[in-house]
Length: 374
Image (cartoon, rainbow, N blue to C red):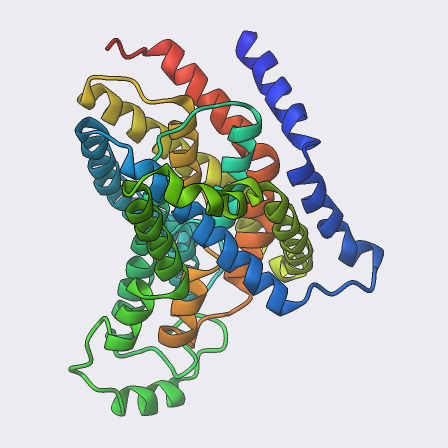
């Protein structure tokens, strides 16, 4: 009963924070037909700021970590990479069994879910900060590392489809609606049989996409600067740390508008696709919480509740920055709207409103049932 009360408190407390109220404000714009357009340049500017600010603050905190914390961070990076790889593979087979998506689109969507969401992460950081819930300083590094597996899973799955020799020029396989056997023969006759699974352009986009570059860059700058002393970073902290919450509110205003506008695309995937977008985050986040707790047992000491919750968010969220960029270059046959409809219209909306309180409750319940004694 106490856990239920705590969930209700966290849920209602979270629902009416400025962060979420700005998201709702944006979400209502398409429904109310308000002639408001968020300037694309401003959205890009906010995204750049948030990625650098997360990295900056994480780098500052990393500079103060001891050997034990650095060891924990390294272990979490490995576990996070493996967990999100498994998430991507599970997502593919779940989509194949529960929806009518083409194999090409299922592979692409699974890549989105095998990656993570910077927007959900920064929202969760904001919620934890206002609720005074502590988390490990190295979590922003995991945001960068755990973005990569989904890209790799999507590229591998798509490469297998291409190398089957029966896919048509539009990415459709035999037995799927719209399959063109004539197009398939011509397409595969012109295909290079020695084509590598991961092209040079795709690999470059995965590891040097703007999001990862800015995040790792911010971490490096914050780390190097703080090693020189607090006096070096304190002036910049007013911009990168103090203003973070206000700028995040503007970002969520735009995200609300985008998420709402993507809802109409969900009908293309059917009811199973909608169910996946709402149920999958809980399963994948639960896997993250369990993985974090098992690692805590292995490490022999407990982690903060916020660390569990952020790790759950990294496992249970879906990309809308890194993977779309990779898809644009390496998987042009896939639908550009279906993955974003699920990622933004359903999963992002669910996570920032209901998911975060659910993950806090799941973490609290697990830690209470199986405490780690240091």
